[in-house]
Length: 266
Image (cartoon, rainbow, N blue to C red; front, side, top):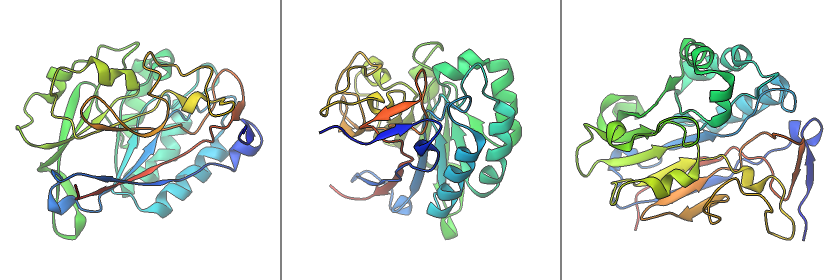
C-alpha cells in the first residue's frame, strides 16, 4: 500500500508525526529514568521548508518538554536557506532546554564558517568529534558533571569523523549516546565502542517509499532506513527527518520529530 503524499510547500508545513519512542537499557543510571530527547533531523530550511513550518515544529517540541534537544544535521538547505533565520527561531528553545547539534552534509555545503558561529550565538552546542558529560541533579537539572556521555561525531561524508578523539576522557562503563548525521557511521566505529544508543538521520526514511520499499536510501547499509533498529551491538534510532530536499515530495515516509525517552529495563 502506498502511504500518504506530502508536498513540501503544502501539507508538509502542517503535518508531521511526533512518535514517542522508549529506549530501554539496564545500564542507564537511575537518575536518567524518563530522560527525554527531542531529535530534529534533516529540516532543510530553505525553498521547500520555510520558517512557518519551523515555528510550528518548535512549538510542538516545547510542548513535549524534552530535557535535551538534539539536532542531528542537515538543518539548512543551500541555496536559499538562512542559518540566521534558524538561529533566531532556536534561541528561545535553547533558553529552555539543553540544545546540542552535529553537522550534516548540507550544513557543510552551507559553510562551517557561517553555520557554527550563528548557531553558537543562539545557544546551540555543536559537537564536532567531542563529547559532553551530563548529570541529572535535584529536580532533573542538567549540568556538565559525569553521569551519561553525549558524543557527537563530525559528518561522515564531508567532515572528518574521529571516534577516538570524541570519546577521549569518557570513563569505561559510562552510558553513552552517540549523535551522528549519517547512519552508515555505525559500521565505521571501532569494535566494542561502548555506545549504548545512536541517534541519526540523513535517510528521510527514503522520502519516497512505494509498497513499503524505498528506491533510494542514501546509505550503503540498506537496513539503515528509519525507526528504532538494532545496529552493530547497540540500538539506533534513524529519524525520517522534518524536511525535503531535491524534490518537494514525500510518499509513505511522513516527516517526524521523534521524542526518545530513556528507560531502565532489560
